[in-house]
Image 1 (cartoon, rainbow, N blue to C red):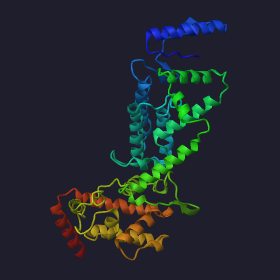
Image 2: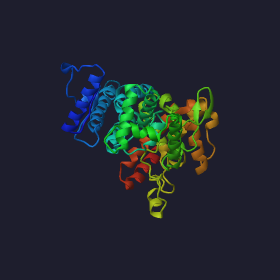
Image 3: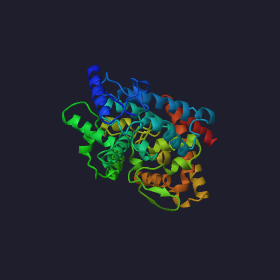
Image 4: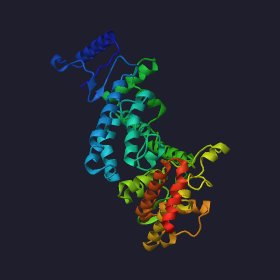
Length: 399
């Protein structure tokens, strides 16, 4: 099969004339019955009315991927409940139903149009956020560090370079190799061509694909370490089931597979990944901002996850939930994790230690869920009512 592409009627006729001459020289005959004018070839949509001939292909694939995510992956949740699909299964379904459309044609369609690529990226981001239970404004980098996936831009580039390497290794007499040479000649003469030819000069045959993967991992690590909202992930060592903890840039994390109750897993995920509504984690250190970051319960400390979970004693229910967690933790298999003091540094260190313990994840997630649920209920009320509610709780406990 052969595809002839042109931006004008005259150009198409010129290509057809040249092709007819080539066929006569090689003793080939065209079959008019099997020839037709097409806008799609092996699933790739072409258009001559846009600057990017693959523009409609990006749009169509984004729509199909979105429909597969809602109808296939998330449609299953209507039967089993949101979050009740195991994380590994959700990632497998994403790869099988959604990712295949997001990367379709990446080997022959270099991403030269950012606007078109963003259509696909939005589908990837929204799908991964739904899997993790995060909101639309949550951090992007954690979608890849927590699920062991590559950003779509990097993944499509790797596929394109792999195919380019394949083309360059073909014999010069191979049609695909000759097509690449013709495309390169058109690009040299500033004519419309496939951008693979430009990539062939930017990335030589010996360019290691591993370097791109290492650079992508380094970029993910840097973004995590530089993010203030992700401070609980700074210098993280991923716990292992059969060995010491070690640094892993991107993988399916232990708490995502170890916590089977969806609400508990969502609560722990949001605290770890900075997708919570606590006011004390903020990049603005001005005096006005610090005042707004004060704890809405005790009003004398920054409202951070470690303060809410370990230090704040203004609400009796929060203290009770914390004491029950400590008791449960010590009675199970983690007596060494029961803390002695709650200074700021000790609270942060202890919280990170217990969160990243392999088999403590279900207990920790349950504690975080009940604490966050209590605080969410209180924060929905006007601030002046908080004191009255706490006073009523305290009176009831004393009685």
